[in-house]
Length: 352
Image 1: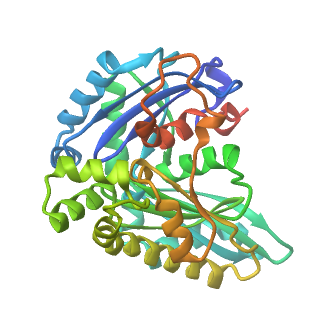
Image 2 (image 1 turned 60 degrees about the vertical axis):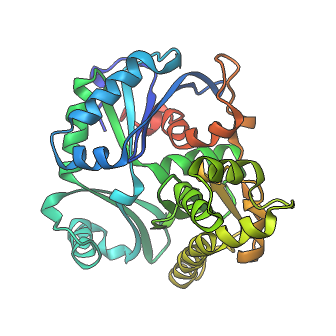
């Protein structure tokens, strides 16, 4: 965070960098109106190599996105940067109130016990999300210093100034809290192209998890098990999905193992939450988001397999594209993380 003393008020844009794409968005937070946005797909292997190397590929694609691939207008170069949730560590734990004066030592101990990296190689932040007479509930984020330092340098070279960094799942939670009854205790299932992030949202994020299954996994499974091309498999996925039809049995049989890998991980995260936070409220809903959620019938599958109300979130009823040409319906779901980054309030960034 920066002190507002030396910075005039300026709108904020969201910048979401993942292994498979870069997205940017500018939102008028008062009207929940999108003023500008863009997306550029990345080669996943080149992206991995760039993160471990000099980052030239990322810089090239980021400059291309900002110069040629945006629709509407970006009103600022102040950016909230989202980093892949899979590359961050999020933990919630409790401490006695008496331990508050030794918070740094408590955080260091938590890192040492549960995070497979030394504290010296991490940036760590935390906040007290709940306080009772006897205990404090701490939400802690940790992220590798090299990842952040490298991304900050690249983003700055592209002409943007990063004023805040957060995991992608936190940005998703912000949108859902504002648009999808996210004030209810909620399970978030964010299905990306290659991974699925899972989180419990109960006022604040409480628990996170993830699994290496995503929308591309569904496509590959369909292509392999139905012996069809990847292009046809993608069409089956987004047009037919799990809905009733002449191909339902074969498509469902091909997709079920991948979907159940996700629901088993969801059940593991729920179990961890209920065991660790025994006095919290009952979980009320499952909200499915992300590029991989764009498959007919996926909400019903999750409802039946988890025995819990589940649906695909649709925040665009409130977050609108009236000022710019909107993306095709099947592509809207890929913008939810960057929308969360762009809709952050100034009070969440600046210290007075």
